[in-house]
Amino acid sequence: MALLVAQLAVLIVAGIIAWRQVSEAKRLREAQVRPFVVIDFEVEDKLVYYVIRNIGATIARDVRLAFDPAPTSALLGARDSLTQLTELKLFSDGIPSFPPGKVVRGIFDNFPEREEAAIHADVYEVTSSYQSDELKRSYVDVITLDLGVHRNILHVVRKDSLHDVTKALDEIVKALKSHGH
View 1 (cartoon, rainbow, N blue to C red):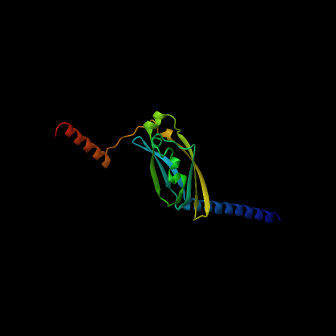
View 2: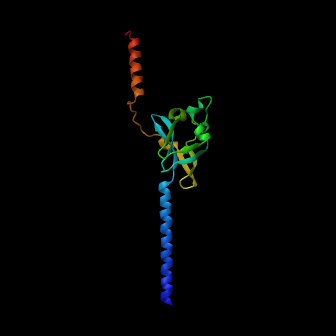
View 3: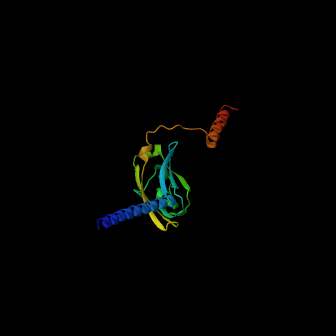
């Protein structure tokens, strides 16, 4: 009888271990094939950009991004028709389909103007919600964005774009004209 109880106990423990392994394998498979939409800020040459990416392996559907607080921008506030980032169509209406590897990037602010105004929040909590056709489920991720981490970082300003070359040539032409050439 004791042998039977011991065998039953071993079978129960083996069953629990097998169930956990199957559950973990299922969780890992889902993590490998799910969409994963993230948003972040990037700073280049004092300009702040928002960047939205699907870093997952499958398409994300009905992507919605909700900010708390609503992001304000010194740069965008200067435009009469657009005072908040959330008024852009991709934020107000969402993104119907967002393939894996897709990146949407746009200008958000200018650090010097933002700091001069001193009225804009640095920290935003963004709730990203979207659906997966592949897995037939919805996802909600909360991302904290903090522009403060970009302050006081030394940056090297590169002069390697076509815009920089054109600007330098314009200055040379202007200097030559002012000297009568």
